[in-house]
Length: 99
Image 1 (cartoon, rainbow, N blue to C red):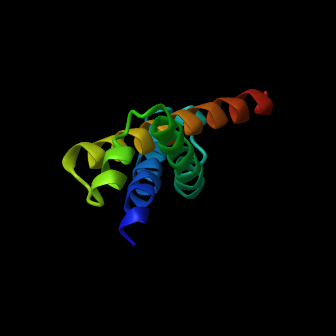
Image 2 (image 1 turned 30 degrees about the vertical axis):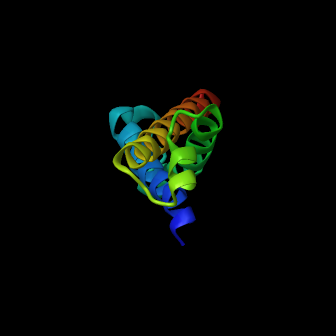
Image 3 (image 1 turned 90 degrees about the vertical axis):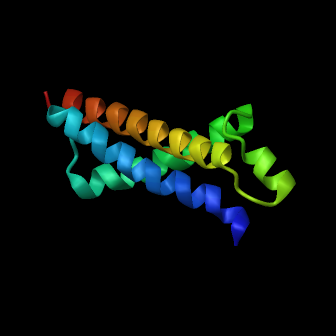
């Protein structure tokens, strides 16, 4: 179960990042539900990409079989940023298509 903890953290922080991006970009917001869904997808993708680059500390957590503070913060940052970025991109595309 502990191996799924970084992914769960990334997905939850992605939802938060997606909703935060929706609040900041009111014209591009998709609504709370869709901001959360897009944020979850972006959080998973962002955390995975940063993990592949070795920036989240996930490899260290797997090696020691425990989550330390740096791997948790890396998962939160990767998920939140990924969720916010994907929400912003999809929101801008939606806004452009509405014209």
